[in-house]
Image (cartoon, rainbow, N blue to C red; front, side):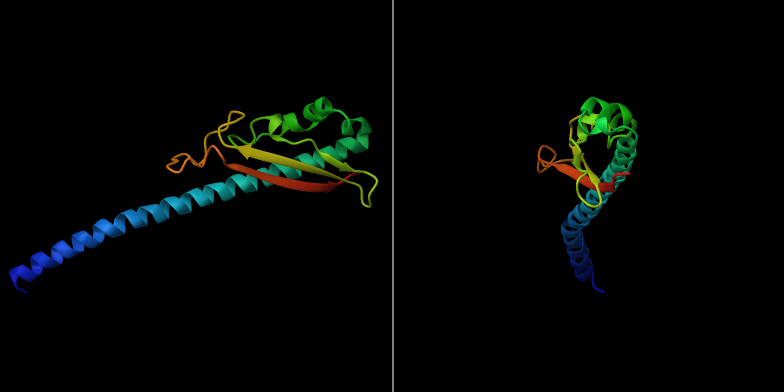
Length: 145
């Protein structure tokens, strides 16, 4: 292969890599961030399921829990923590009770709002300023016992 052809091949390869490498890094970064959002969402779902179950059991023992947020916090919400995902009882919305329906149920919703309640900012590298608007949440319905 002549020397000019080799030099132009190297220049073309360098130009292609200059375009492709940033695109590859963007794809990898996006996949990592989407995976992290999915994991946060699944942990929230786990926390909501646990809270709904404990709330239903507590209602079976003392139906005053339905009306008292402080009792709900003390018996249920204060006991549910997932590091850097559920850090505070304030992340739980007031439970929705349907004790007259069949079957009677309680619905618990928990939210992850980036940078609030001691939570880390997500996404951590935030060139589009999405963290200020990002809220992930999960809801769980459990039969009251």
